[in-house]
Amino acid sequence: MTAKIIDGKAFAAGIRAKVAGHVARLKEENGITPGLAVVLVGEDPASQVYVRSKGKMTVEVGMNSYEHKLDEGVDQGALLALIDRLNNDPEVHGILVQLPLPRHLDADLVINSINPEKDVDGFHISNVGLLGTGQKSMVPCTPLGSLMMLRDHLGSLSGLDAVVIGRSNIVGKPMAQLLLGDSCTVTIAHSRTKDLPVVVRRADIVVAAVGRPEMVPGDWIKPGATVIDVGINRIERDGKKILVGDVEFASASKVAGAITPVPGGVGPMTIACLLANTVTACCRANGLTEPEGLTA
Ligand code: NAD
Image 1 (cartoon, rainbow, N blue to C red):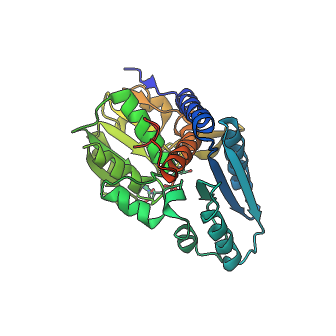
Image 2: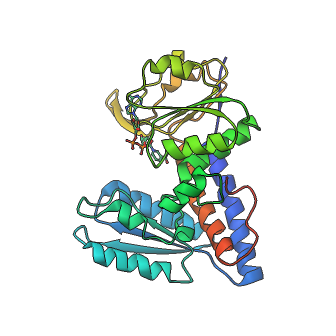
Image 3: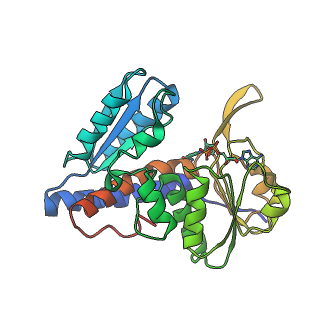
């Protein structure tokens, strides 16, 4: 079997087009422009790249982008004061604090100081609780994008066996909650899981979110399974720097029914879902109907 390659780039372009359409309607019919504020602390090069591309795509879909760059050594009080200002700014519908934060800052405290209705990353403890209890929430972007691709490929996920490898608060745990919400039988595997190959082999859906290059070989995959590879790992091969996922694409794509590539799979969906969450937050803040198909 040769797997269908799930084209995250094309899928994400479709989501951004939907967001852009909705933004245009909000402007025309309601005189509202959704706004996304991104807060970056310090000079981490990867974070700078992410923040730049988030800003660029925010503007491309017609929304306002507000970037706040703070010095590496900023004190917590000043960061919390900025978040408080953004919480109270009616032009700002989404707030994202780029992680990781420098060590001297309490990331949990910072994230939990964001108004949950503007928490477009979905990391605020209120949103975590709402998602966990199946209530309307802001859903973390990477799991949301992964869920959208699964639904698009499989239709109903009800009754399927799903294994999520990785239990982080950012990807693994919310992914498992979303799959449970879609009535999958969910297993969360992690670094202490015994006999991971056996656990993975029974899954109709495998979501790998570990951060270990190509740790899941093709012979762990059940024939016909759908594989979502969240991992982004930079490695050197044949003297070239390349990106690979947590799944060994060459072997897994011979066994799986469908698979996301790295790059070009989950990655582009993350920013598209951030924009989707911002437009959803803007609609909720203004008591307007939410766009369909842009949230869980
Ligand atoms: P993390 O380090 O917070 O969590 C990794 C998880 O993997 C942990 O829960 C750990 O228990 C588990 N783990 C580690 N070794 C394992 C092993 N040998 N077997 C089974 N489980 C093991 O990472 P994260 O933030 O969840 O990110 C995971 C990966 O996803 C990274 O490569 C990251 O770059 C990538 N990521 C991609 C996107 C995207 O937009 N595509 C977004 C977020 C994260």
